[in-house]
Each structure stands twice: as C-alpha cells, then as structure tokens.
Length: 154
Length: 154
DNA sequence: TCCTTTACGTTAGCCTTGCTAACGAGTATG
DNA sequence: CATACTCGTTAGCAAGGCTAACGTAAAGGA
Image 1: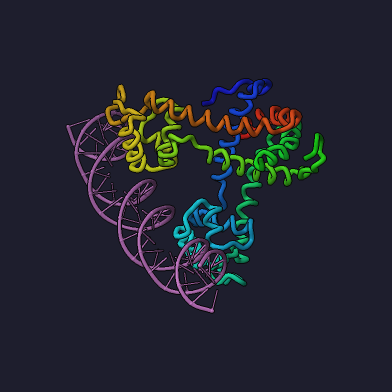
Image 2: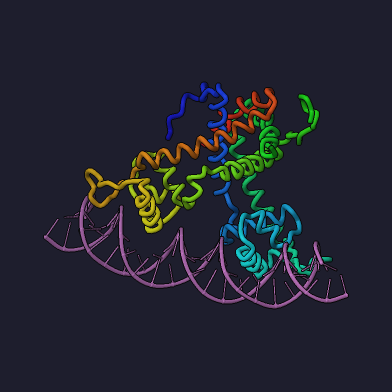
C-alpha cells in the first residue's frame, strides 16, 4: 500500500486488462468507503434491516418473497427482518388486493426519511471528496458517470 | 440502441449534487455486481474467510490483531477465522521473530492462488462488460480510472 | 366442478459467526 | 523486581442465516 506515483503522473491505464483491474479495484474500494459512511440513526439498525428497508424505499411495495429475492435471503429470514422493521414502525404490512396469500410491505414515512437521510449523508461525504479534486478531474468524472451507470445495466 | 453520441440521452450530470448521487449509485451498484462474481472455488468459503485471506494476500504477513483490525472484527472472531483457513491449508501461522506474544499469519501458495483466481474472474467479467461499450465510452472510463483511484485515497 | 398441485408466508429448530469476559504468557515500565 | 499492559486464546452468549414442515390460498387437470 501507499506506493503512489507523483500526482502529475497517475498510474497509466493503457491496456484493456489494466483498465479492468484498475477500475475494479477503485470501484470496490470506493464503495467500501461509501458504505462506512452510514448515518447515525441507521448505525443502530442491523445491516439486513437497512438493506431491506432501502430496497423497499427504492421499489415502493413488495411481497415478502420478492423482497427476500432482492436481498438474496430466504423467505423465513426476510420474515424475521420485516417483523423487526415493523416493530420499529419503519415498514407496514398490508393485504394483497387480489391474492390473499401474499403480504405486501411498504416503508412508512419514518422509514423513508431514515433512508433518505442516509443517502444524503453519503452524498455529502462524496461531494466533499469531489471538491478536493481539480476542476479538470471533476469534469472527467462528470463524463464518466453516465458510462458507469450504463455499465451496471449491462 | 443509439449508434454513437448521446442519442439515448443518458441522465445528464450537471450540478455537483447530481454528480455525487449519480456516482454514488453507480459505484455501489457496480461493486455489488462485481462482488457477486465470486469464483467457484471461493463459493464454498464463507465470506469472512475470503476477506481475511484476501487481506493476507494483499499485505503479506500480519499478526492476528492487525488482521482483525483490517477486517473490522474482534481478535477472538479472527482467531476462529484463521483457524478455519489454517485447517484448509490456505494460511500458515508462524512465530514472531522477536515478540513471542504475537502470532504471524501468511497465505500459503494455495491460498494465494485462490485469491488470484478470484480476481482474474472478476476482471474477466468486467472486461466483458467493457467490451460491450463503445470505444468512446471506454476512452472516457480510461480517463476516469485514475481519478476514481485518487478519490479512494482522499 | 372437484381434486391435485403449486405458491406464499409462517413457525420451529439447527448451525454459523459475531461479541464480551476472563485468563495465561510475554513484554514494557516504574 | 513488581506492576501494568499487550497478545492470543478459551468459554459462553446473542443474533442471523438456513432447512424442514405446515396451513391457507390460488391454479390447473380430469
């Protein structure tokens, strides 16, 4: 670690393989840093609950098995998670309009506020880092952002 | 699909706040995708063991408490983790040359090979995605890679 | 239509993994 | 040389994931 070249000559990215591995490393590390910038109120919430709540905020209303699938967890596990979220008043359950087997979950106003605050927090952290770049570097990232976004949809 | 240029009108990234949130979202999503591309041999290894092994490969030789710190885990937990890695022949323990309290851990040849294969796997996945971009988009990412790397070091 | 099959959510019970507390051995410090 | 501190380890506890099994609801076939 810590063997950085001079600032004027950052690591050259020439070959396709270099591009892959540099990009992979940077993205993984940056996401770790971002993940650690959790807001204080969410600190007290276990990670699985945060994940489920965030997914509910993103998608609106989901059945239990759908939510479990999104979170990469089995229905019984998700059952426990949403139970805890419900106890804290962060999600609410309701009956499916036509299929009475399904139980739908949606975030409450409070749940939504919590997630929003967390995003705001991470954005603020990243924004501060971006301010420490040169205008030219920011411009580069501005151009790259849509491409990175496209990459996640391939 | 558009041939070239901003025909698809991807999300415009104008303000600083937009840049932060777009970048944050893309980085988090991309890292999730990357994380899921774990190599088959590592599939069988629990995540904590993979993490510890990867850290050992990156840093070479570490004492137990250092490794625990890197992985954000308490010494007793790390103790169990390296015990399991040792059983599988992926790491080996040795005495500290001067301080007889400390126990040093280093990856074995096999452990190193496993992590290397995993990285190769993820690189291959990302490289394939990159090939699906336009040359112009790749060029954009090539310019952005060093900036992203710098970002992780701020 | 009725009977069988499938899907959904829930409960029960197990296993893994993290933690704190406590301790012995080794090192630093007065 | 006695005391305080550090490191690794063990023991025991709590949380969270999983599979198995079950009741209810919907879908499908004779």
